[in-house]
Amino acid sequence: MGVKLKDIIYASKIKIEDLNGRIIAIDAPNTIYQFLSSIRQKDGTPLMDRKGRITSHLSGILYRTSAIIEKGIKVVYVFDGKSPHLKMETITKRKSVRVEAEKKWKEALREGEIEEARKYAVRSARISPEIISTSKKLLDLMGVPFVEAPAEGEAQASHIVQKGDAWAVASQDYDCLLFGAPRIIRNLAVTGRAHELELLELETILKKLKITREQLVDMALLIGTDFNKGIKGIGPKSALKLIKEKGNIYNVLEDLGEELDEEPETLREIFLNPEVTDDYKLSWKSPDKEGIIEFLCHEHGFSEERVRNAIKKMQVEKSIQKSLTDWF
DNA sequence: CAGCACGA
DNA sequence: TCGTGCTGG
Image (cartoon, rainbow, N blue to C red):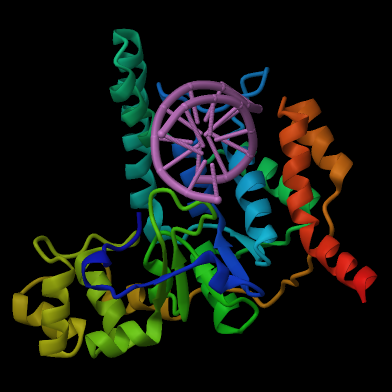
């Protein structure tokens, strides 16, 4: 879920065309999770192949990525490595929420309550190792690079943008701001039916709030993150007020007579000095057309016509260049 | 979520 | 040509 900063964060609306020619680092777990939650039937059943293996993520990755590429945008997917120990509590909690949701989903299905069923199905979505490995396999076949983070994917994606190897991170979460990503794109989609694309710029946000990145991290720790609980009753607005008044989290905690469940300095380090790597290279290849057909259509039962159309979109850049060359 | 067919 | 609603796997 990430830190709840929505209420105080300034975002500007952009168009997908504004990203033409740019490189976007996609927060892979975040995006795959959304595909798994939303690409479902009305009763919440995910897309599955003949053998009952989930394919929602493959559908999402193929169609969205090809549509993005068609817009002249280059993408790199960034996956998680090991989770920091302090995240264990969050992970355990999420698991129990999923298990509970799955029970209620099955229950609603038995009762024939379709809408209720879907609601719980969405909450039961889980990224299994198979989902990760099949996602990576598809990206390889598509010629789209991916980076495996040593730890948090969001930290690595933010690092890639900070280095200038990508223009922005695409994620729904605000955590990348804490990790120092200069730009975040929210709602990255091509046929934006529900939400418009949002651009979050770290510098602009800090200027507007009149705080430093360190203070933003301190605010997040008061509100609560994936790595700590935060102080009960403190949301984004009071966190901002308190940090601006007192300057840093130590003064705020002293003033309130409260403590965090971990040393603030340990928690700060997770965001301000995260474990990342420079050991990656980004190269885009042309899609392995027959490989994709074999994998998606023969192995997982996708429609060959639809898949071929998607592959065509990925080759559009070349065909435009080619036709221009032919013309001149 | 995105593709696609269909109707305004 | 665009919006809407069903289907995909």
